[in-house]
Image (cartoon, rainbow, N blue to C red):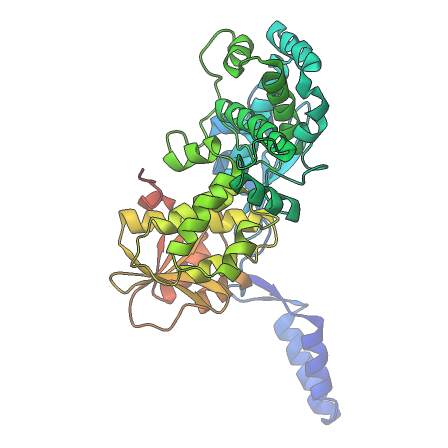
Length: 437
């Protein structure tokens, strides 16, 4: 391997010998030139400190071929990896959008299919009939409030701001004053969003997606069905040529928790999640910032809470996990904690029971019943970078086995570095992620 000698190194060496006799300087420079020839020096077998990033990859190498392209979208073949996650670009005739991670790329692909399906529905007679009825409905005055909650009641999809907290409180008291105008508006809001979630379920997309175009299309169709008295099933059947469902890959189909996310309102999910967090001994000053986090949707929160809740009463330290998750800086961070929690549950169900959650030097670990210490991480492809080296260095001191569990693959260099440190690698291919109902 060839390594370039930094200029600063040569300057240091020259200055070091400035006070030496001219003969010695000449001898040094001649020797250096003879050995180096130029600024390039061969060191066979010598590896760089870290893998170089970003890593160029091909979409067909990291995703199933059938997922890369359809009649309505394509995932660009050029993919870059930042040392942990893959970055994709998805194109369609109506939108170009980026996706961070394999899972999100597949999710965005499903969303493109859903948008195309909705636009097909919007050309049907059933849709226009419902649209006309909606325009004459007494609910018409509420359309802006119901279909544009981001500008009015705040982002109901992410359940994040003070208005939503007030709504959460109001819904708990819903029905106590039968004549309340506020009750009527809340019921309308919940009814509309219930239709919207059902529509998202039929299209197999996340009702809380941050894809703004998808949210707009879902709202348009949900409004027509809600205010116009139409049925989603009729509209979907008309758009799909009479078939029962559209040919879109299922989003966690059959999973009881996913069904709960689709069927229950955000506020109901918050009630359920709060009760579970309290049972896990998570403190109130952690619960509130986690449940009202601006980047973590009710879906992220519910799947995360459910995964750690299902570890059982005996598992200690889960409060540390929620403390870390509540400090997420982005949607990608929230997804990381959600998927990593699912990984921990998969390990618990399929490999060995989890005993406690650990937090050391800024990283989450867990210990199983055999005493092994495990570093879990949602990652597509792990290169040996300074960040990964820091994660590995953060392993708590133990004379027990150490395991690095990830959702993807590791580079050859990473595998060698882990082997040298006696750290076992477990990936998604080892059966970690079979989520039991």
